[in-house]
Structures are given as C-alpha cells and as structure tokens.
Length: 308
Image (cartoon, rainbow, N blue to C red; front, top):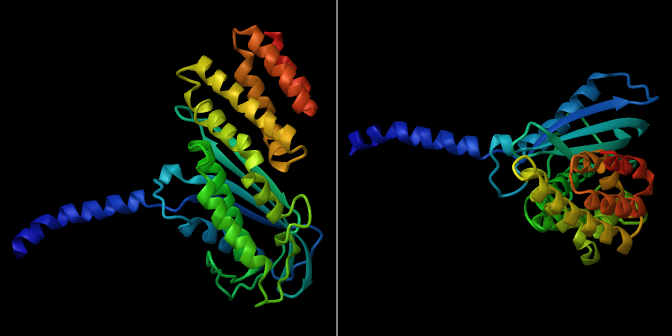
C-alpha cells in the first residue's frame, strides 16, 4: 500500500501544483498613493499604505470563481491624499481604471473609470486590513471591497449577459452595512446615496431594470464585438452597433447617468477606429447620426469615420 502511495506522490504533487496555478485571485491591481498639498512627517506611512492596499486587493479571493493568472482583472488605483483632519484620518480622492484584454490581440481596452472624491478613511500601519462581506470592519476595507465587487461585476457583464449580477449584490451588502455601521467613528455619507456620484447611487443605477440595455450592451460590445473583430470584422461591427443602440436607449431612459457618460468618454476614439475601415457607408452614417445625438461632445471624433 505504501509503495502505491509513494508511486502516486509525484502525480499528486503535479495535481496540487496545477490547482494552485488555476486558483488565483481575481484582481491584479497597481496602486499609487500620493499627497497633494499635505505634509506628512513620516513618508514611509504613504509607502506602507500603498503596499497594504495593493496586497489587500490582490491577495484576497473575492469570489468563489476560478481565475487563471492570465485572467486576473487588471486595474489601476490612484489615491491622492488631500487632507489629514487628525492623526490617522485621511481625506483622499480615488480614481480607479479597470481594463480588459481583447481576444486574439495584445490590445487592452478600458472597461470602467470611476472617481470617488470622498474616499475618506482611518489608517494605521500597525493595524492589518481585514474585510468581511457581511459586516463592517473599517471604512477603508469597505471602500476597497465595494469597488472590488463593482469591478468584478462589470468585468463579468462583458463576458456574459448580465453576468455581473451576483457581484453587484455583494457590493450592495457592503453599502448597506457600511451605511448603517455604528461601531466606529467613520461615518461616511458616500454610502447613503445623497448625491449623483455616491456609491449607493452608482449601484442603484447599474442594477436598475431600466438600465439593463446598458449592461447587455457591454456584453455585445466586448464579447460579441471586440473579441471577434480580428476574425470577423463585419460581424463584430454589427454587434458593436447593436450594443451602442442599447447603450443609447439606456442613456435616453436615464439621461446624465455616470456610467453612460464614462463609457462614451472612454470609447469615443475606439468606436471611431472600429468603424473607420468599414466599407458600409450607410452603417457609418447611421453610427454618426446616432452618436452625435447621444454623445455630442465627441461628435467630431465620430464624424472622422465618414472620411474614408
């Protein structure tokens, strides 16, 4: 019996190694923490804060899914410290950008870009960052957990129709317990949905049934559009056009929504490049007419597709 076990040992080791290589965390974040008009007597605190946030995002499994190393979601997080009201309390502005690879190419495209101007928290280098999906631990871990789930949700929406729903629900848990927490002095109005850019409001927007055409549009734009463009450019353009029609519908139904504004700001050049080489002049004209109406600020970029 022992000989059989010893004979199987190399295969067991290989199996375990393979399992470890396929079970990776979901996020691969680059984090930069800077100061703006703020004096910090010990600059190593900023470096440690940066490293702690990066480790927190990258080393924690956020879902039960399996992600291979090359499937991890790349994101950049920029945190600018704008004030220190008291020792250990930091007022900051955070910008987050997540990207997605396009199948069969070396091209990475932006998926979400969000700015949180009230990204405020307590931080101590001696206290390890911890997180619970169902209870409040600290405002910093809640903020990072919320945006981790939002990034994963939107990324899954690009790979499967409404695929991000379970992750938005996890983000909602974070919003609810953070808005109602009384265990610390970190009261954060950003959880309560008072303004158009508050976290509660953003989550309500993207999960609103009236906004569903935006989310299904993400799937059509990325998975059925960009991912097949190299092999089937005309089919890809048709899918992108369908996606943009859905996103236009969402923009008309819910005007001024941050997600639609951010989508067009990030994608205007990319959309123009997709259609510029199309031989279908009628499709080009249809695209320009539609997007000039829904996204007038980028109309000059869209009109360039008519020049070829």
